[in-house]
Image (cartoon, rainbow, N blue to C red):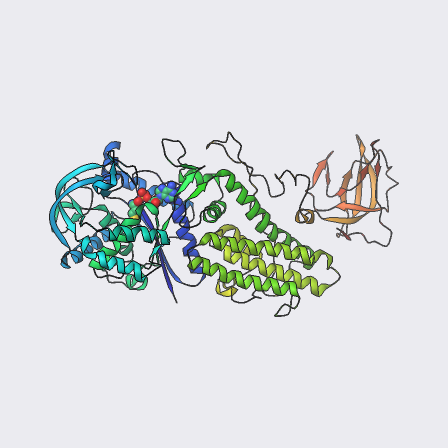
Amino acid sequence: MSKFYVTTPIYYVNGAPHIGHAYTTILADAMARYHRLKGDDVFFLTGTDEHGLKIQRAAEERGISPQEMVDENSQKFRDLFERLELTHDRFIRTTEDDHRKAVETMVERMRDAGDIYLDKYEGWYSASDEAYYDESEIEDGKAIASGSEVEWVEEESYFFRLSKYEDQLLEWYENNPQAVAPKARKNEVATFVESGLNDLSISRTTFSWGIPMPDDPEHVLYVWVDALTNYISAIDAFEDTDNFDKFWPADIHLIGKDILRFHAVYWPAFLMSAELPLPEQVYAHGWWTVEGEKMSKSKGNWIDAFELADEYELDVLRYYMMREMPLGKDGNFSKERVVERNNAELADNVGNLVNRTLSMAQGFIDGIVPTVSDEPTEDEDIELRNLCIQTREAVDKAMNDRQPHRALEEIMALSGETNNYIQTVQPWTLKDDETRLGETLYSALEAIRFVAVLLSPFVPDACGRILDGLGTDDDLRTIESLDKWGGLEAGTEVEKPDVLFQKLEAPTDDDTDEDEDEPVSDDETTDEEGANLISFDQFLDVEMRVGEIVDAESVEDADKLLKLSVDVGDDTPRTVVAGVAQTFGPDELTGWKVTMVTNLEPATLFGIESQAMLLAAERDDGSFALARYPDDVEAGTSVS
Ligand code: MSP
């Protein structure tokens, strides 16, 4: 069995979580879920980074103790991840005891390697970035890269011999092309290392909120030494359990592009010094802009992660973020795009496919998976099967290449092709050919299983409901179950799930953050061209049958209404209130066979519950005409 260890950055707890924090953790969650579905032993780590000058100052500003502030804010992240239904195996806090012990051991190992010495630091520091900067990286009192303010620092400090690791780092990048990704980021880091590394100041004496330097408690460890070590402390490094041996090295450290240097230069150097294996991959994703602009509190376009979770269904949010932002590139968060992707890709493509197929399965084959031959024989079915198998492989490749947006593209293409397949084979025309009808519905249902299993790490709730609807057990929800076609078993009962994806209305110009996008139901269309059209699937939702009027009487005080008793093929006739009394007298209609809608919600008129609806044509003068069926058409016959 393979293992998969994925980490997110641990988040600073000086404030509340925003869209960037939600994004990385959702991304890691989708990767973790995907690998679990592959049967891998997965460890998914996230948590909070709670020490350092930035945190201490934020607490001072609020007039509370750092401990009080980190407890409060760390809880917000924990709550957020619960709200987002994330599946992390550990939420680490750097103020935890086992973490502190691991950091101490790590530093002792670096010291034992001869890599730590005492000196004096003189230079620039940004508390906001928790980073040291060279003179060349500063302009007008600010770090060029981040725009954060810097301050001059002069104090005694322990140093780590980062310069010693220059060649080893360059070799690591060279020999492991996937180690730092995307490639452009690797080049950026390699150039930085080639330009020469200074030793790194790893302790401070002018503040106290951190882990003390072992054997010299006057010094507080640099927060990045403390923070980076979370990736191994969380899996019990230096402890007597097998977690570390099992999971280390990490398969992927997911990070944002701004913290690349810490992860791709400092962290591997610390590990080399401590004689520990290096991570398989450090992957830097881009940043979200918001409606085309850099997100900032002062611009008022800050997206709070809880508000995001309140505004959108989790499935929609997850799908949008992972589909919209190619991993490694920046992405733009736009409400309009969320609506577009939701409506066109989730609702109209996947939702429609599942709806129409399961409606047909229920209507045409009693909701029971039919028996078909092991291998499809018709060209269309063979093509669909091949596409399913290819998509499963393409998704796996995309996930290994860390391109979840491409995986989603492939899955959507399969869903679209399955819709096309249905359009081509037209199961509704095959009612007289039971074998072919069964084959086509089987193919469509099995293709839906492929779509739902592959999509489930990204869109877990709806896919879980689709797979429930298909009656699949856990074995049929794994990636392995997609190795071959035909997993869905004959005789399984299938059922159409409730609305999977609500259509959303496009945001209006004056939409503000407070505005709720009222969802409209799947049944309505907001597409102007299609405003008067319903999908075939929507049509299938209306159940019509031949009804024989067995009795009719007037309704007291309602001169337009007749109370009909209509045989629609059920055990007993239904009561129907129809507004045709000014055209037909009560005696006239008995024995007529007409069209009835039989799955409308009952309505009560003049105290009488009407259990079906009579279809009639209304002339301009307000009188009605009824279409009648010949006598040999039996009551209850379905009309379509
Ligand atoms: N505590 C450090 C990480 C330590 S890891 C050992 C830290 N924390 S942070 O809370 O400031 O940032 C966490 C992550 O959020 C970073 O990966 C950063 O890139 C990411 N993002 C911040 N703004 C973002 C966007 N607008 N979009 C996407 N991600 C963004 O750094």
